[in-house]
Image (cartoon, rainbow, N blue to C red; front, side, top):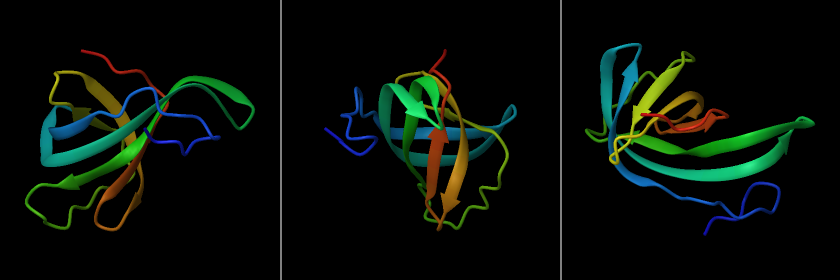
Length: 101
């Protein structure tokens, strides 16, 4: 269990293999490791769900992630919109939106 956001434990830690899409276009196949936190304060705003984690291109290529909104298609068929907040060449992600299908 990850314990790294405001000393809270993650409620879920999905990991696996998925695809990143930019708009409706397939962008890159990735490995992902996520940490889901519920009801956290971020800049004095209550966020129902905060997702952080890392994604890495499966082929090992340096991916130009950019600062656009991307969508991760998880192995379990859920989707997550996110922003890449740091890339070296892995992408550290952050999302304050919920998973959807």
